[in-house]
Image 1 (cartoon, rainbow, N blue to C red):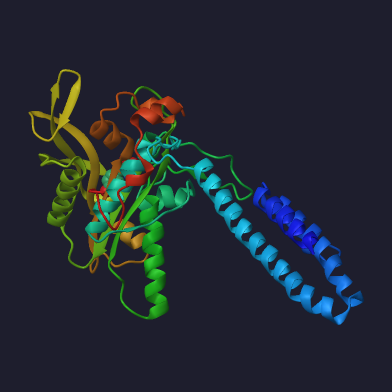
Image 2: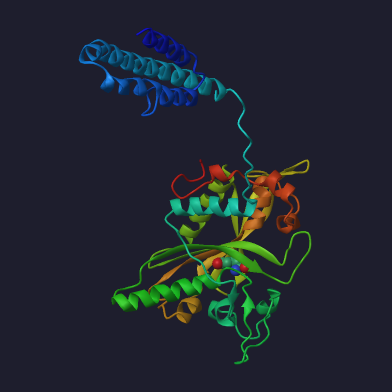
Length: 367
Ligand code: DAH
């Protein structure tokens, strides 16, 4: 049966020339599928004489096996070619520069908060917070501001309209009310546990408000309050703690002095000055012959302790309050305070800090 050779040559050639996997599959159906050419010839076996069947049966089967094998081979080749082509097309040039990632900047005030928190955390302080809208009690009375005392006016307070009870809430003029809230919580805790007071060692970073606006004052500004209360802390600890903080913050040995002052909530009270020198337009903090006031501090007034039910004959400690915006201006050479709040993106890009290397409680300032 020459016919078989002809079929084999023709189909083998077509298989070799199939240009892709789709074409190859179509060919397989036409040649070997149920109604394909080879199957049709196989069906004619039934009508043959036994001798003919003996002769053609094996030949036909061999043809089928051969064509199937040719298809498998061709499929392998086509698949390998397709893979090669994909690899070539999808080649990645690892030397290409990456797309720049647009990243925001950390505002200098946030940066200074993070730095100060890291330093005080090292010294064993926890962070406490309180509300921006305060009552007269927390902002003034409990802090030993006598009623109608001129110190209340000194603070240029933003008052809210009186509520139904005639009470006028205020935007807190300092972070000191967090002292009262923290002490109240500790007193409550001690009552619940039936134990004596836990020692207090907190800082309270936050926003503060005064009706004041010029080159060095803005209606909103930032402070960090500090408070330590236990049975033994004295003024020497206060001085050491603040001296250490200021040197760690400015990352240099800073000369400091404590000047007597007055605050209603501390006795004795002091202001801390740091040494600096002016070189051209630049202020260099550390040494030098000039002094700059940097924070207020003192030993917590007995009346403050009494206002939360703590016995001042047993407990004592110190407090301090520092202006954060001032710290940021000094450390990072930022000339105008008002720019802090202008929300100018270019300014934040220029004076801001990378979000991926923030100081934190675990790594301190060095990260
Ligand atoms: N509260 C004061 C202010 O806003 C700052 C201050 C001074 C806080 C002395 C203190 C302190 O805790 O002891 O001006």
